[in-house]
Length: 138
Image (tube, rainbow, N blue to C red; front, side, top):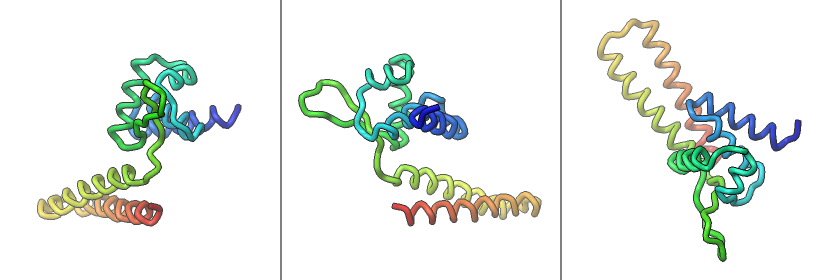
């Protein structure tokens, strides 16, 4: 198996773990592998997926901030490339942390079973650690 295929498979699996389609991960993996802007047609050709699927997946990647649309002089097509910033990943981690923290405080007031509350507290601590690591990387 070649490295391009392995990278595409890896990002496809990561996408599925996060509730995204396999195509979302495959497109990200392809852009990661080539490290250059690619057109929709190139992506469709490389991955052997439909234009509709590729278009929807690219839109999702753009919404998440993982991919950005770019312009190439002399070309009329849109091109896509990976966003080089960890900011979108940090934003997601921060939002998850804020949600956990907010509900943890509410559940403490509701006198939730201590065992369940402790599990949520551990989730809160883990989300804080993840956020700290991401902030150090950026």
